[in-house]
Length: 63
Image 1 (tube, rainbow, N blue to C red):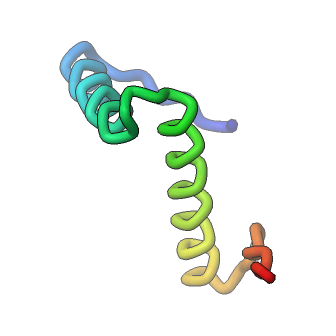
Image 2 (image 1 turned 180 degrees about the vertical axis):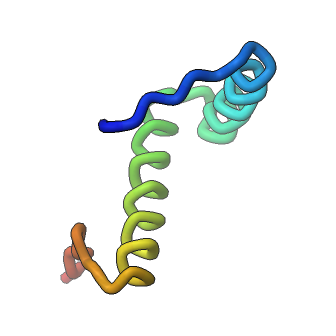
């Protein structure tokens, strides 16, 4: 990680509320929510890489 973001109290509260909603959507299971977020981030990174013409994290084929 090469960029640190500092949030003010209003931003922190909004982020906490969004995180709480996301965990609730996953039945209160924080590990399940974390795994889902990791997958979402990977898909977004693939899209960004494709737009920039670079595939840093190629998708593995499913058999």
